[in-house]
Length: 240
Length: 326
Image 1 (tube, rainbow over the protein chains, first blue to last red):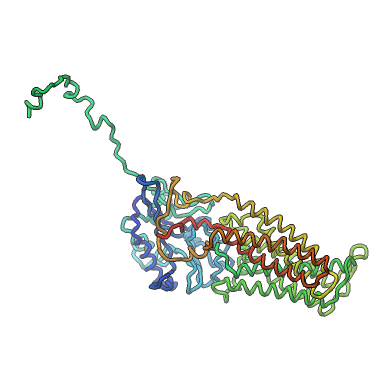
Image 2 (spheres, rainbow over the protein chains, first blue to last red):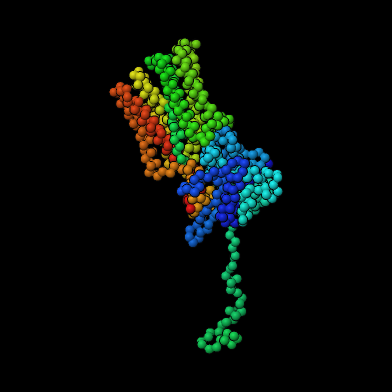
């Protein structure tokens, strides 16, 4: 069975929000209608977003590091938001594992958003239905697009290739190899939701230099320099 | 969680409506075996109408919770997996039972079909409908409670106490309303219903206190560490990704001070439990026709505060991602 998902590399994400804006642009222009912004130029704007980039600081100054953390629907393999839906509007696609909302069936009861520990579902202020990341389902399943463009908008937009996309059930896919070989992990594993999306941890590239690499331990000048100088010409004065 | 008044009124009005129906039927059961003074058809008809009115008002309140109320009928389809869907099916069943229970009494169809239990319990149509109603009412209490108790991420709710509280508080307010109704009519059932109301209020006090104690020492499973998957004792959010509000910042937090929460908790603990008990006790001594009505109204007000606190107390793990704006 196929399970499409994203793998997000926290090691290279620079927090530029290109995935946020490209997601909004693609999905607000699609067949499902706009992702509404309310009061966009007023003092208290609000709007529907499928994807956000958050920033965390780890550690205490001066030993801190900044982690940019993109957050969208994880397309769980055991999605807790699906069984609670009273209308069947929330569902998980059988063929590719993408969790979707049927906007024509949703009654806007918000129960699914309560049943998601990650907070990735948002009620659209004007359409009054629940919305969430579709993994750009209208794009990835569009056979008229060239193969290389059949990817979510966020993946295509990412300038550092921090977002990998593919089938996490295929052991040889780029995403599966990345998860397996680079320590890919799931968010909030304590709930047993089995998120399909994974995150790759930050990795430090360090040079290991030991003391005797900086100073030659077998330096003959150091070893043989047993002369005690008392103001007279030294060997240096002569040779230079 | 954000306490939405639509859901607060839905759950409290339904509880009182179910409780009142159960009180009416309990009264009928006791009267039929001649333990209390029998009442005329009017008592049950008007009482059922009152219960039905509460159920309709609760249903009406629930529509304000929906973004697309015109599609509400769809909510009956996923009863196999969703407790919300189950409630949507059981609630109209409850309303139908209460309606026909009142109608049969109004039409006077109370001739016994047969007599059960050594010729002491005459069974008529209303009695059978009443027994069915008891099953449906308790099923509805379980459905309403499970909507909240089944969400494992809201650990304050994910406990059998939630169902016990919804049931006992609903029964308490329903029987309290029956006592108020009897006091208004001036019949002799005030003591009978008042005693039941006191018993259910005390039961509810037990389970509600237990759930408060449980939640006071609750240790949440999710932390910022598991939320973003970084193993470090000190992680601080610097930006949630946007400066204005969103559904995530509105729906899952009450936006009130801890002091207000504490005050609401004290308010409901006083309004739901000691004051109505005191008023019922005093009305029993004074044979007052107005004190039981005051007891019900004060307890209902307290229940609104109780439900508000129930929502506000629950901490959703998604809030871990929204600790700092920028």
